Image (cartoon, rainbow, N blue to C red; front, side, top):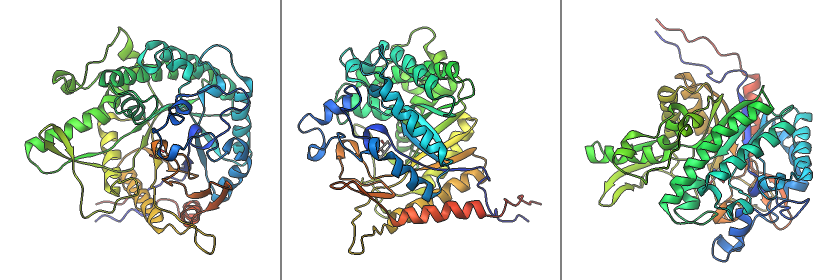
Length: 454
Ligand code: IFM
């Protein structure tokens, strides 16, 4: 006989929400902040929908005290934010802008005063433009500058920030920014994307060492955007196509970080331009980490097309405003598979959430049942993965606030708090109250019962 698992979430499971600097802070010209590639890109006509930029965004730079109180009302255990490199080092390296560091100092203190654990990401795509002008992530010197930056920030905040992430979604920054041209810096070369990915991975390894030097007690990880790739049919061609998609999106990052090698199948088939690897690079990238951050929103269904893998639509599934399939089992499978194949010490789901066409109705509220249902089912999938052995220690909703959704500007709303952009007023959505009650319910939940088998 076996009893049902009453509750797989451990008592110390961390319930959080996530954001990123350029998407929420605004104040791009304040207190000595330097220019970032996203300032330049979004100011270039035709790059971002409606000409939107992050110049004001949610004005979190000034409004963080009220936002932290809202986080407290939500009952968050942790808040994930990123640090804007050009606020700290306006030229990317060299002279430190103390006022930039002061902002993160104040934010961290405000969070801790409310009992909220800060989770800091060092790079969420806002490269200092000065470094981009020297070749950006295509060149090795940016990885060296990143290690310098990591050590400076960890030395200042490491007495209070325990959880550090070097990079957010290096695949997105490398490929969408350097090969597809849809994100800053807007380049369109596969060779540049491969070089950028290599230097991001290298800087991750060097960054891990730099953080540990400055803050020996730190828990250090990296955040990857991972998606389970399902073959459209069980034909060998579709299975090979799905494996290729898995290789380019998932294994291209997981293998160097956990195994110190690039996926051999892709290198052998020349699926991508070969990276230029110097002695010691692979060893540096595989610096031991304390946790893996997993960002997941959807899955891929892949068939073998005439020109390579082709993504298929599922006519029976709901899709979000981003055109992403709602498929919570994909997160379950992903977490179990990553645990089995790579054995990370711990996993945090560092982003998960959905954009829907939210509107504020006559009573002033924002009713977003699709988002609540999305969160509920995806959190359920996390619970099942934990029950099946995945070492998931925390979950962060993307996002706390509606914000600047990159090339889509402000047209896609991911927040559990609605932002009325003309006034910058914050309006908690129904999903905020659902998450608040969920977190409170977890705290009051009976302790997990042991699984009885036999
Ligand atoms: O808004 C982004 C975030 O910056 C990185 N992960 C995916 C989110 C939704 O697209």
